[in-house]
Length: 89
Image (cartoon, rainbow, N blue to C red; front, top):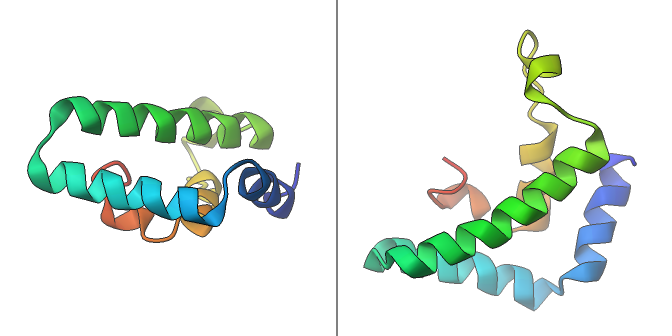
């Protein structure tokens, strides 16, 4: 799949409001240090991230020499302000 196809696929599965709310709740839980809620939110983000990695055919071993940030770029495009969370860091 191309980057655009992956982005559109995620946007079709998760509404804009849901994507915004997920990031907002992650930031809120990180601020409140609610570990159980943080873990739950990170699990959701990880599942979506693994989907992106899978669709790109991306593996660390293949990209260790020349870093390719495409998966993170896609996540940033789909989830506004995700880069401000600790998940992204």
